[in-house]
Image (cartoon, rainbow, N blue to C red; front, side, top):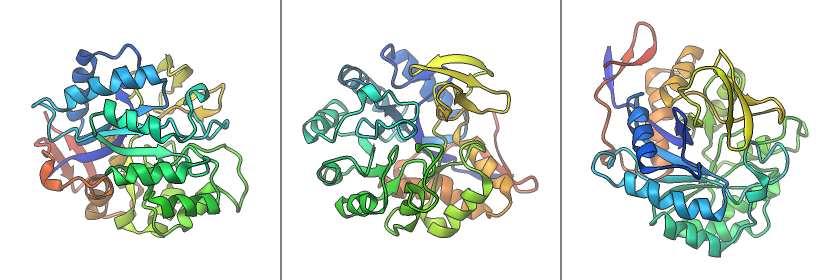
Amino acid sequence: MKNIKGFVDLQMNGFLGIDFSDARLTNENIIFAFRKILEKGTCAFLPTVITASEELYRRNLPMLVEVMRSSEFRGHVPGLHLEGPFISYEPGAVGAHNPEWVRKPDIGFMKRLIEWSEGTIKLLTVAAEAEGVEELISYASSNGITVSIGHQMALGVDVARAVKAGATTVTHLANGIPNMIHRHNNTIWATLAEDALKPMIITDGHHLPPELIKTVIRAKGIDNVSAVSDASSLAGCPPGKYQSMGNDIVLEENGLLHNPAKGCMVGSSACILDCMNYLASLGFLSFDEIMKLGFYNPLKLVKIREEDIIPCKNVYYDEERARFTVKS
């Protein structure tokens, strides 16, 4: 058994029934969720707030920051991920986000988001095809925010403009798009072909098939891909029917979390440790390569120094079984 540092997750929407985008969120909820996340082999993560109303951002962002900056979580929760609101409102691309709260790129509103979050936004997801998004990307990048493109209908020309403006990554590549797309002229090929983009992928065993995971890693190179969980507020909960983010959700026995009416997934039910074990089970990555995808690459992507992260003390790699585990 080999002791490891744990994993870094750049996209966690909540855990065990706690939703970071919930208008009823409390400090006690946040503390509970953060503690439970850190017990699951995650040494550092970005709480993620999805497309929401102005009132919710104004309410929840300062609350999250207050808990993040407490002594208990310093070194574990280095910043926030805002997945929206400057994404596509098109069906499929908008996914489980509420299209009524999608906004056109607005630097004035971006300034308010930075203010409410007290400058702690580390990652921002925007749609590359949105009108005026280049100026927003440039502004966010100049404020130290890593800009990702996702939940979009973007094609090659849109992606190229976003990269020129400062976008450097892709949010859950090959997800957050319609189920049916053009076989050649689509956002997956466009983002794979753009050398400057270092994508994030959800490796929970449901969002992407093994052959696509392998293709992304082979196309981009092992140093340029980060694994994320995209854990929803229902991660860690038992199978059943739920209501969350305005969606009627089913959590299947096999872990698939989806909205049957919309025909889309609603985040994942996995934590990052589950995602890394799924990667290990595919059999084409070495231990060192898996650690790059789950620890080193995510930190580099959002410009966080390794020495600023407090490692886990109870996460191990079983070399014989090629499996990661948490010991109590």
